[in-house]
Amino acid sequence: MAVFDCSDPDQRAAGILEAAAAVRRGELVVMPTDTVYGIGADAFVHAAVASLLDTKGRGREMPPPVLVGTVRAATALVEEMGPYGQDLIDAFWPGPLTIVVKSNRALSWDLGDTKGTVAIRMPLHPVALDLLKETGPMAVSSANRSGAPAATTAANAEEQLGDSVAVYLDGGPCADDVPSTIIDLTTAIPRLLRKGAIPVEKLRGIVGYVATDA
Image (cartoon, rainbow, N blue to C red; front, side, top):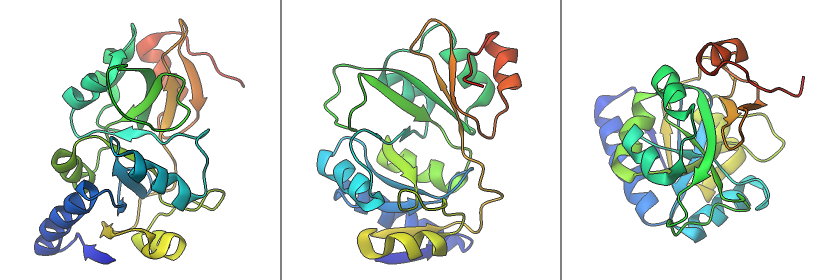
């Protein structure tokens, strides 16, 4: 297990290289994002995704989202964005909006019981983006044991996940612990799945009506 202080330019550069190498080996890494710290693995290595779920104490019924470093990478993962996907990406990416869309059926990945969908986000954090541009799409979930509070520091993530993670990229404390907003675009009417950092009113400003359970 290695921890890199990303406030130091040399450690940051070394840490991103080491984290990318770990991901390519099928190991787990922890990174800062613009919401909370995330635990990530190569989205296309089945054993790595299974290890991520096991480390968190989650089952296949809760598949992890996929983080990308570019919009082009996101486009390659999906069957279709639907009528609103590109407009939402243009408005809120990179940033704390996760969109659920139909995944590309040609991809050989196994994120869990996704029912043919994938939750995708491009985070607004330089360390996360630099790593994602090295690794390609990563399955990333909040860096905590299932049911525990989301980690807002690398140290808090390490307390919960320990040496099950190969590399910790310490980007300092998160600004807050508000997660990303999640919107489902797989139905005719966009549906809010989780309230988060982007208010639903802002989403409605782009797509018009958004269904909510509240």
